[in-house]
Figure (cartoon, rainbow over the protein chains, first blue to last red):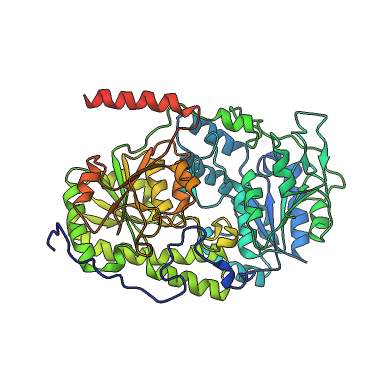
Length: 277
Length: 299
């Protein structure tokens, strides 16, 4: 190797001739319409998020009946569970925030709480076929469904230190709602259902404002326009839905009411549905 | 276990903390988590990205002089090297799009091309303490940097199947440029330099448009507003720069003129500088204070 100060000839690129060969892949350059729509990878899977604070942190009284209902539903439907974080994630966030740490570190530590909850759910569901799904084993999903298992995974997406800084504050924008939604969108899932502890979306936090009104059905566009101070799913889920190919409707249901999950899986409207118009 | 008819509302068990009963989606709560002095984790690290198509795909003639330059610069500066993908990533995307592979699947498989490039580059840099840094070993960075190593990373961020949808664009928005930008941002690094095969950012692709003009310096928000037909770095980098807390500027330089790297690392303006613009409100004072602190130490 020798150092090379000034150069007379630019060394040639070795290229591969494809329609994208010389594209710089920055926005707008690629005419995506020259390709057909993406396939649905696992179109009969239902992705269900079990809330952390809303369900797990309520303990046995909330979790046991829900586990039984999930087990019963899994006899008829393919169910993939994503676990939320909850109180311990918030505690970790508040310590990290106090230490002046950046968003990426919060996102990285947030994964661990969600992993605890996934493992706890796996132990409760084990005798019904619950298996813990490592993100590295994501491609084994077809195997698990083929043998009738209920895979349970971490809700957090794997962004960790690569989570982009938020527009406001340092709480990561992509948390367990986002991860679970994106899992469903990638798989081209049959449904994506968020199991929480409220009947769905309200005009304000019903735990704090008794006059908050229930919204049974709303479009993403309308919801973004309302610009509510608080929401029942992470904002980034709504933004991603606008650009999604497959999952253009989600449902948020109350997991504390028996039978809601069963009915939602049958296609019934039991909570708030948010859809793309 | 029994299926209760109507479930009573069991109490949540809380740990008392600032965010305990708050909705993390509440705008006021989110805003309250801003800090005036976010911690810089590795403030003396410089992140340098080698373009895939622009440099690695040009082989020996482009890479050997650049490798010598990186080794020279490492004597003075701590450097993390990131690699781009290049022609094989474009081919991967083309085949995947043709087969109908969803976006997340494309993001998942594309990283393998970066992996090839890290192995190639590591072979060249091995005798100069070049070492491939798997993202699982991200936390080992201090050890490696203190030992004088040159960590080489795959640029793609680990978004994998969870790459957010991009609508009609159809290809992942978060590539090697964004991945390495986030490395420097989360570490609170000293500088972020993109090595490409042009003198910087032009008003259009200079390879296709001979009338394209070099932009020496531009604000990130201003650049987004210009809505140029082509950018030399990923748009997601420019977008993220507008809300970055640490990285106040990135520089794009010509890797075919290798000695520019030492000058850029010494703080010279030798390519295109994209400025972050104003900080998010609450961070401003803190950053100014920290900077003043740094300068005082330097004196």
